[in-house]
Length: 222
View 1: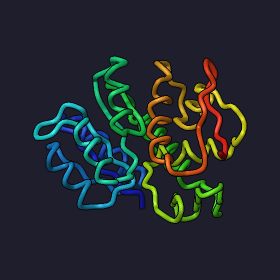
View 2 (view 1 turned 90 degrees about the vertical axis):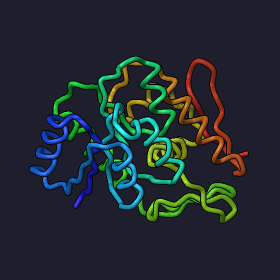
View 3 (view 1 turned 30 degrees about the vertical axis):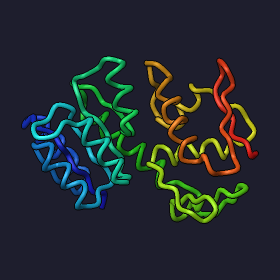
View 4 (view 1 turned 180 degrees about the vertical axis):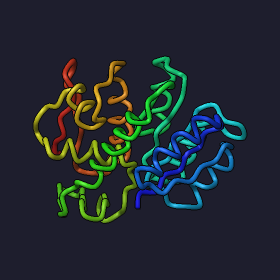
């Protein structure tokens, strides 16, 4: 059963989302406090964590950043009324997988959750070796010279996408549509942020992600 944690201090939203997810056979736990919810996410394994931005105890952006720093790779989805472009970019830089602005429909939220889960579950069951970079798609593991590299789910999805299009240029728009599953109306810098993080983590590999000015990116071996 898919396990979901809701960290949301607005009673009506928390109860509605919890009810609808339970009706869809998700196992749901919740907290109205940021610090408590953060600790729950650290101490337990959740497939998905839904996080409000403005929370007592610890705000949502801090929760996301600290969870990623502690190598928690649950799907993190921000639920917030903050809809400024800079806020959205800050959230993705912190490590969220998706960003849903309030008010939202629970049907749309469930569609996003299912899309993220489906993408993760549909990975090919094989091992791929690209120079000194090893990708075990069955175990969701990446290593360089046999040293494990921790990637978030979104970084992992992005790496597989680039690998599957090796030596071919892919545009930012393609990446947004195929990796995020939904059209993104804002700045495509969200892609650049994730590419930067991925490059940093793959720095010791004999591969490179080249920028093609005004177009997108291409993944190559060195």
